[in-house]
Image (cartoon, rainbow, N blue to C red; front, side):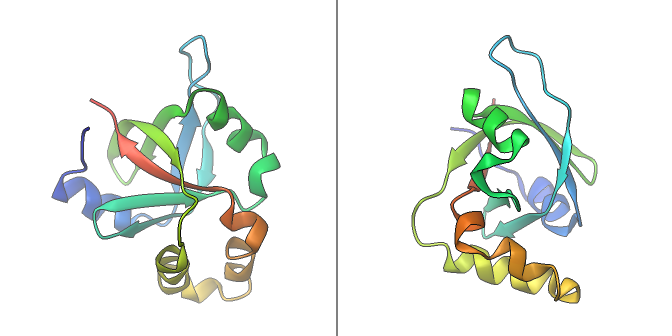
Amino acid sequence: MATWNTDELEHIGAAEEVRIAARRPNGRLRKPVVVWIVRVNDDVYVRSVNGRNAAWFRGVQATHEGHVLADGVEKDVEFVDVSDDQDHIDAAYRSKYARYRTIVPSILKPETRTATLRLVPRD
């Protein structure tokens, strides 16, 4: 399995927002959407603020593949559902986006937490 290199992790971790696009079953990319992203150690995560019913999230579920563009890093990725303990991810969102204190609670709701994905680079 591929891993992020240090430079990629630093750029992605510093990016305020990223663009992600799900890959369709026919191999074409869907229209990119802007999402918040957090880095926790050597992993990166995104969440759907509108939960699992958001159109982009449903698109991801079709193939679990896509593309990310973040602060100069452009990479094909696999989207992996996260169902284990997410307190470390919540803490990363609180810390990184603290200045948006009125918006952050929406990314920490139980229904939003169920729409957490880890992005794994593809070879």
